[in-house]
Image (cartoon, rainbow, N blue to C red):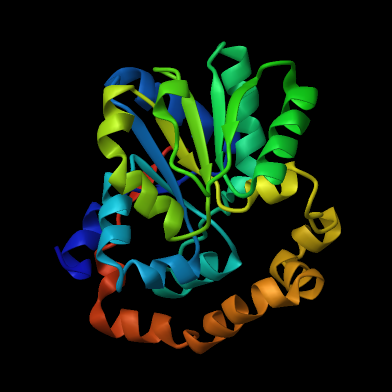
Length: 253
């Protein structure tokens, strides 16, 4: 399926409440009992799905696609004249873990390095209670599915498009075990304490991307350079009429 035909099928989610988003994610998963997938999409990954067929197929599997970052917010503001809330994985993941704890649902972490994933799970268990994160494994080895409990949550953090492609490759296991999979990007970096988030005032003025680039230029420079080279993409997409094909799941009505 080409991108233009796939675009109306992507389940972009519009809501102003992070807790309501999490509640709806749980409700949908509990209703289907066939696994559920939640992806986050930022501006550059939106460009990637137009070139990476497997990435696009994984996005089509998602029950919810949450908008991540100021770039994508600006994109939709220009194309459609609507304000889309920023539902990034770093902010939403702790809310999801806390809600899972209240519901006695187990959570596992998969991704990043051995040291970081170990530290991330330890920190979250200190924060939310012992054994909240019942299992963690680094992303440099195949996931040991035997260690993943059925009817549990699996948070996958490998960066895009690796994590989304991994979900597509493992969709059968996800469905058979009824796993709620959430691709969380760089959440493990911050949860482990290896990376420090921008101060709240920097996030409030929506310059966290600049803060990350300043602290870790080698890691983020190419990404930011790529983002600036696609600055004219919204104008091209508007000419193609893509804005008329986008559909949102409105949860805040």
